[in-house]
Image (cartoon, rainbow, N blue to C red; front, side, top):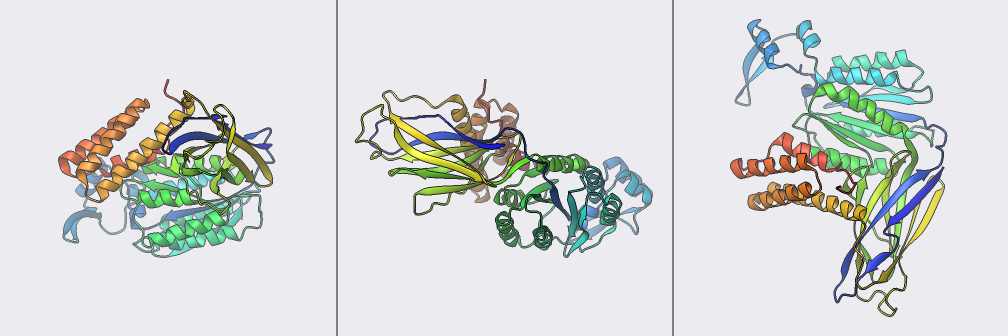
Length: 455
């Protein structure tokens, strides 16, 4: 198995201008050849066990039946009328309308059946406190794992949510692992808001330094999507949005499949640019659409941490290079010049490639794949600007930006999300507010726009 690195275009076509110019290059990282031995997966599942996760998920018909039977009563909470189930919950409620934690337990029991003997699984639950319900246990000990998971549905760790406590305990559990080749994954599921968000982000930085990936699953319409996405991005994990608890088992199973497909861990991409050249922006296009931090060192090299590389899914990174007029002016048109030198490395694998450039008249347009990647990156940035404007109370600016996003998405052939964006713009114009679920859908969907050019 070899780490492969390629760039489009192979030779960047520059144009003579009086001002600095921005050029695009699309980097592809992939694995060539047969996979290495199958990696063990060391999992910590972190479940939000606060009150909202323990409430039965009841439809309107079921609620009316409970009310007629006297099991539901109306009370005042903070001056507002709400309904709650009286006394101990009847067994038929749990059978017909299980809480979200019941779906979590069902999902984890299914995952246990898929674990190999070399895998390890641990379960952490948190609310106001955090508890290790299942210590790191071999996949061979299925009965012990299922017994520990069964405790999740009856647990009471308080009413509020402090994910930082759970993250700290989960990361400490994974850090004790003595198998450096194993894939280390922490999968966090929550449906609400947490205390100490800044501490959660600091723990995500710590996880990345330790080679631990955090994936997040936000359930329903009231969780902090910005926090969950940042936790995933900082540690190179996946961020998943589910509207219904019934979808939890499928999402958890998919996360295990993703962890199993990892070929190389913690890949870094370094871009050493020539004088008068600057890396303006870097955006990951695949497997998720998200900006990348590009810290620069004194040698003019930028190092990007791009996360784990899957066996069957390349990593695509769009580079935006700012070329100043002084670059290459002493050389004749058509001569190849060294614009940048790129190299990638991971677990002893190393590959390098040059990015040449030449001045041409007229200059050649970027390849369609590069233009498609740039269009998607620009659409995602516009959407982020729109949400930031809305958060600042800049209503007219937010509406204008959302309409611009919809236009870009239409041009990209993403008609479903273009129409959804227009609906959010209309809601903002009519009511002064976007919809919670609509914004979450758009935020998560934009991260997974198809990177292929529109036919």
